[in-house]
Length: 157
Picture 1: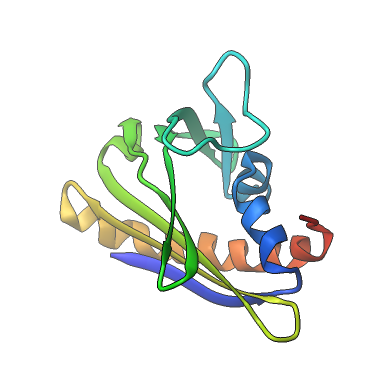
Picture 2: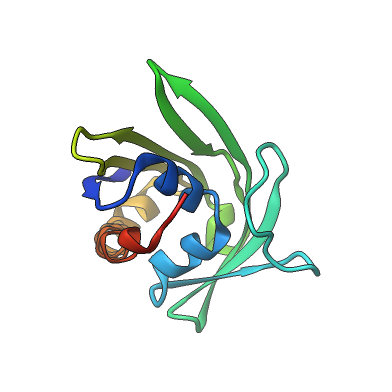
């Protein structure tokens, strides 16, 4: 199963790339549906560090535990397009029943804005759980799009 976006953000590509590496942006674009918290005693870093997993937990609407996971970022390019992949995985709760791969790619547009492609692919155990979760995932992804469009003009590289 998957959910995805293909949207234009009113910010230069370098600013969007930097924003995607900030945990504060991850938190801002999913709240109030999913409220993330760092499980590291030092809290969230300013930026994700590639290949350094960071433990997190999430609560649906800030109330219902969704489980724990870790963010594990990989940065690379595909055909000259910068790609960020989170290869982290669930460690408890609902997240532990999911195998997830979150891929985000950004491309500069001629007018200085950014084409943002965002795809979360997931499998669940049992598989029927994925079907049950999909409508909620779709809503969260639409909210992500709304919030990213709203926040992008404030991002600077």
